[in-house]
Length: 547
Image 1 (cartoon, rainbow, N blue to C red):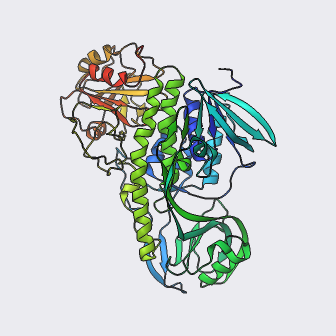
Image 2: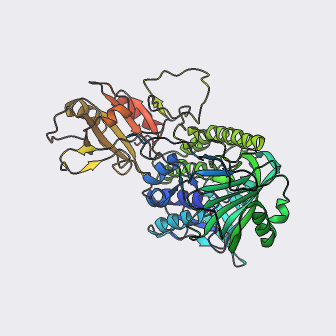
Image 3: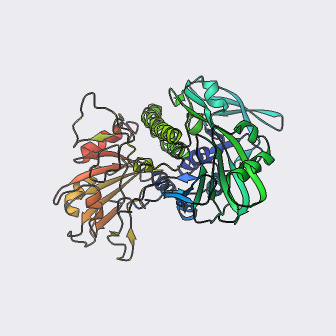
């Protein structure tokens, strides 16, 4: 296709659209990304990033999200009208890091800064967001999509092959596709949220301060230096407040905060605010023909649990690597159907999880109510997918889908998140060249891990798999620490020695056993098989016959 007309149009340049575009560009696919807003959005918005998303940003080689993100401060709740401490709590449960789970901490980075980071990485691939450019309409056929976009009142007809709608709950893409967006709107439970600069005696910056409750009137203030040394993200809530009126007037915001804070306040600036109604809705499918939806365009929910942005980013990653293979001509476009089949059950369960939390908050009136480790999203799986293969777990007819899963490092099936393992020695690369398994996983190729007692045991399997395109499949032998480490000829791209046994433990390997794992570009275990024939069977559902 002519470079003037990239094969993918991404509509919406929030984190979801940016991750979709970055995943595709890292795969060598040209992208055009547009956003109807004339300027990048400001505001903290949904700042929470859970461990599974941190893993995906690691695979995308965007370390700033973890490095710049700050752990959530402890929540300090007070008795009404006082600074008398009612209780201290945490928004996220404490989980110790393990070799298999290096990203164990809930991090907070405002969406405004996250967008800047992601745009910077996208620009490294000569791709910039076209601000102030709106999608007006589109038509599609079996061969492609024709979109009408407008900027500064000037319309342009744009031919492309695919559209990804990451344009939010009110966006054009889902509406024009005619996808259902069923659910409920909770008009009785609303929030005014935004960013503000203020100082007040007694408001330390070590805590997330919480005053009042949902049943009456309440205020939550989270300190964030991204706004300034006196910056806060605020939440005003409660049935006794006229929140629609407050959201329309800066002075009323100040008045509400003053009425809820038992101290003298100095206001400097209201940076940004919005009125939020709790909606719980999702699409019936994530695509129609050559057009896809992701993130808020596909699902919205209450802010409780902070799963929205994270789910959208994971939507984008799931779609991105599959669309790249299809566009490269390496996979049949039927692979794209698995985007919907894999994400629908996850989102359905996500809405249940966040709605349960929200209902507990409303019932108790306590916004600091404890969260479960399920929110880390490390148990999310697609064991039910028709493109994953597990030769060690017999299929069970009618087995219930548990897409959100649980955090369980003692169990591993095809479709689960692939664990990490540190301190892997690359044979022949020098003893100082130590790697992690996460350092191998990238969005543009599958990784075949052959666990074998010796190189001699693993090489025949890899020998049968020679000829794969190294740009889309990479192979590694993983040896136990007891194996001889003398460099030898091998069809493997990498020979790794598990010096401390972390990989063998995480992948549940037994001594003397040979087993093959195929890790998808999104860090999911695509297959667990006995040998080369199982690998070929897995890839027969991914690649065209030529592969």
